[in-house]
Length: 136
Image 1 (spheres, one colour):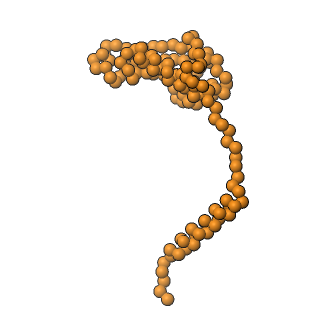
Image 2 (cartoon, rainbow, N blue to C red):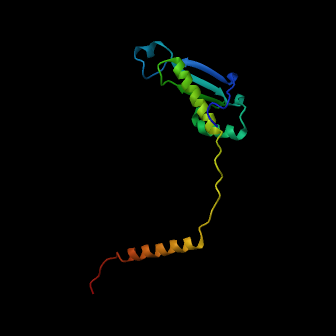
Image 3 (tube, one colour):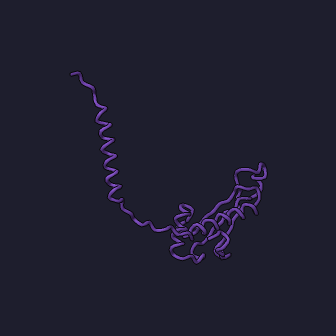
């Protein structure tokens, strides 16, 4: 799933602006350019499996109330930071929609087991020959 395929409902999002650190010089001290995007995960209407994967991907960014907190402060303008936060949210949701293929357990063949044992015996013989040399 591409990041732009999932429609995020507007009532699930809330933004607040705060003073940012980083590039901007004196402007950083005067203007609140950093964006803190809060996403109510319950209002996204995700499938339970996708919801669980999203919580895993987000990790510590999910609050106890089920809100995902994304803080964007890389850019000097509010609009650029807002776009960055929404892009990161869309990427997380797209990644949560990807299911991992189930691993099929396999067993080594009889010849592979025999080959492994032969290699171990060879290596053992090499190491046995490294002992202390005694005079006869």
